[in-house]
Image (tube, rainbow, N blue to C red; front, side, top):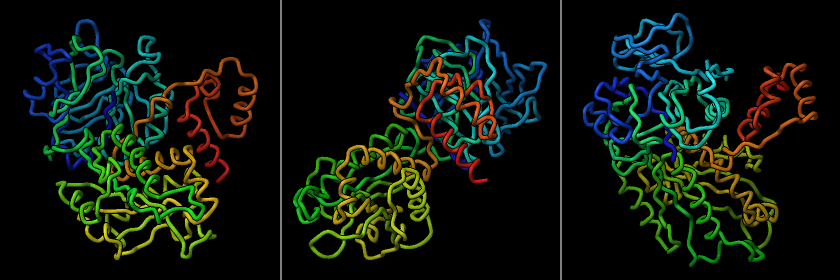
Length: 451
């Protein structure tokens, strides 16, 4: 189980470092929320067997630990509107240190004792584009793997908190988990939202409607050879995207989850009936005029008109789709106020035309499960980016691939180091490679070649 989110500071009333003098266990976190009035809580920093903090820690002006060194950590004043990373100790009334992983958008080699290493459940707080960010996950990471995951999610700052059995999360709806329910921790982090109404939303507080275009009664929207039908593709993509978004804590409503026929008016009514809906996304494939094959191809998104959150969402999704190498139209974002679901949906709305089912090359992709998986993940990441929600990788991406004693790899790392593309060659040689670390390496190489 995993919970991750970024929250704009204007929507936070207080970030509280809760001193657990009543010795509440992890399975009693509900009592902490009831006592404080907080919206959610996660576990805190590492501590001694005497329940004393052992890293820089200050809460509401009371210093609980003041080691004789300076380091990076997260600091903020009473209202949390100046929350961010800085050198500790600082003059702020709240600050916390543990193991810093990201500073000024750059990953660092983390320093930690042996008992903090290895692959285990992890939790962290930090910042992304000026927002408060957190993650609490039962998935097992080394500190370095956690750093790479957070970097790939766009975090600008990150401090890893206590891991393993200390990882826990609970919100005011009762959602959450506890890695060690009976464990007593001396400190928790409790976040108080300024807007506490989160009914009908996921743990991120965000809600998306996925509208799978057409239905099985529409057999006209198909490839000229009859090997592809738009209604099947759209429903499959909605289910794929839903799985990604829900894993990231985003609530999802589908307009036709069972594939049954749903009118355009009903689709809009479903969306308009959800208070505070953040985004409506309609899923389709495109078609050129005529009854045969066409040369027109590529991905595009339609919006009602320029500007606002609808265009921001479309551009965020487009940016992630481009990363997959998918063919994109020369005008990838089209304004079309005549489309019914764009015109009659109150929430920001985007209609995605994934490719042309009248183009042979596009149809080969539209029918391909691997292509669908890649594009669905990209579009989901774009939606998460737009909503300010941290991306939570799939379990398959969290399992590292062992690469012991690889002379060819070590020689390649030496070449990249000499070229100035990477630093810390020993870390890259010893790294347990994941999809995330490979992605980071490709980005580093591209940046170096672009200078």
